Length: 270
Ligand code: NAD
Image (cartoon, rainbow, N blue to C red; front, side, top):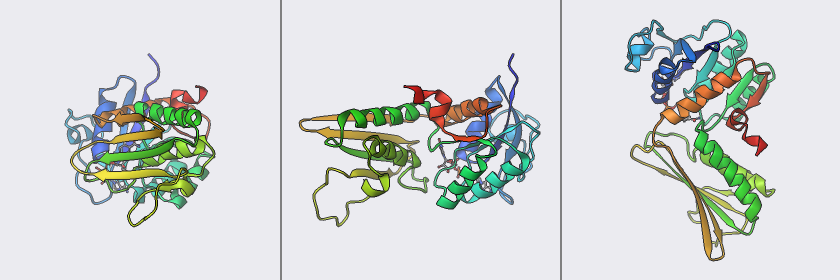
């Protein structure tokens, strides 16, 4: 059997953290070596197995990242924690899978800097399906050209803090870049008080929040007399965990660099 990938889950007590813990414990190719959550939060010093509704596994939830050498850190916590987590990974030389969304420009700059020394996979959405839809969006935009109007909407559960979703931005960026536009120049996040018709250049990105939806993204291309829709619906949080853990296994022994799921899946070759 191949060597087991040792994994530390950061944000262990969260919705994603618990899903990741369960997936690692159920996996035959990975072993859990750490579970981290914020200082002072509930659930510290509890067995990570019990925390996620599995049998005790002997790994306690702590507030410090102190894994054995070679372990991969999988961080799905909150943006305000990301900077410290990246710095800690640099200190302990740990490869990082970063799933936290909504991180600011300075943290993103630190991430790029850290990737000169560590292999890092960062993705706004670790779902294999969304990664493929993003690639298809780029191919479609290229084939259809600027004459086709592109609009995108996303729907997420009521707890989501950032809007539009990182995934929506990623898809819209792929559409913009496919025919030479800059997302920052053409993205329209609200049409309130716009008082003008749509321009051909713009890409509308609209957010809905409510209920328990794990995440839906629909990209529409409008031509004269026809419309194309590309939709992805996440039915279960475990799709992100499965993708992130696939990335963690892929990272083992990789050269330093900032990778995304397109690299993990080898989609850049199609
Ligand atoms: P959540 O609020 O349920 O969990 C966040 C957890 O992080 C909490 O347990 C919190 O205590 C913990 N935390 C806060 N500060 C911390 C610190 N300094 N160190 C360690 N842990 C800390 O949120 P969630 O729904 O699990 O989502 C977590 C993040 O993952 C969000 O940014 C979300 O947008 C993102 N997410 C990404 C993907 C993806 O595919 N990239 C998919 C789903 C969610």
